[in-house]
Length: 152
Image (cartoon, rainbow, N blue to C red; front, top):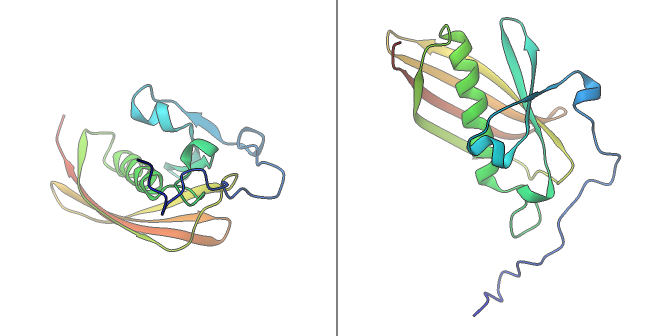
């Protein structure tokens, strides 16, 4: 029996503006044939000795309320912070061991979400990261996490 308290066919909240074109703005698609390939594309562009990462919120990302699913933002934070960490760790294998995400504001379908990631501290085997997910200047989520360097 359907859950009538949470109608799944609620209208999706979309941005009432022309859709942003990441490629025209200098972003390159970030290819991945695994899980990210199913939920992406993610976008990247050079930022110093690393990259910035982003995604364009599409209809496939919506939750039951019509906004971007929190799990999508968590996945994006994990991948963006992990890739920033990977570049900072000389492209050595690593694994996420902790990820904390706080949701600050809802993301509408059609919005372009960027990750601003920072290496906070490094030890011999752990890398501590922080990140803000933003739409323009609006923070939509904050994240912090720990990655374990796995060696070669």
